[in-house]
Length: 253
Image (cartoon, rainbow, N blue to C red; front, side, top):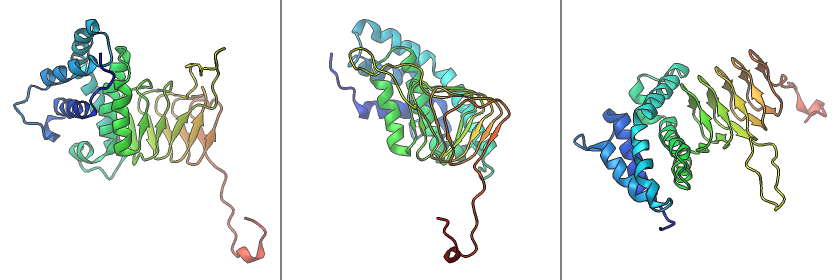
C-alpha cells in the first residue's frame, strides 16, 4: 500500500464532482459518466491510504452520497444569493464565488471523513484552502444554507459545529482557545471549537475561540474577540470609535 495519494487525480475527481452537481457550469464533456469516473479515481486513491478490503465499499458509499452532497451544495448557493444583493443569478455564484469550490471540496471531504478515510479529506480541503484562502477542516460539521462572503482568511476548526443559515464574512476564525495533552505529551483531540447555532451572522475579522455556544438568531459584529457563550437573539458589537478633531491637541493614540 503506497502512502501517497495523487493530488492531480484528486483534483480531477473534484472536477467530476462539480460536473455531477453543477453540470451546466463545468468543462467536463457532457457525455462523461460522472459517478462511474469518480468511483474509478476514488478506488485507486483509497488504495493508497486504506486496507484494500475496505476500498470498494467506501468508494461505493461515497458515490451513493453524491445526491445528498449536491442537495446541500445547492442550499449553499441559494444562501449566497440570499445574503448578497450584488448577485445577479445563481450561475454567477457557481462560477465566481470562492464558497462554491470550498464547499464542494469540504462537503466531499466531510463525507469521506465520516466514512473513515484518512489523509485524503485533508488533502481535498487543503486544495480549496490554497485556492481561496478559506480553511475548513473536513471534520467540522456544517448545516444547510451556509454562506461565506468574500471569505479570505476564514478558518473553521475541526470540532466546530455550525447550524443552518449561518453567514460568515472574511477573516472570521472559529478556533480553539487551548487544548490538553495526554500523559505522553500528545495533544488530545477533544471538542475545543465553537458551536454556532442557526441563523447566526458573524462579521469580518472576528475570532470566536473555545467550546462556546453562539445562540441562534445572533449577530456578531466585526473585529470581536469572543471566548464566552452568547444567548440566542443577541447582538455583539464593539464600542464606538473615539473621534478626535485635532490629534495635535490630544494625548489619545
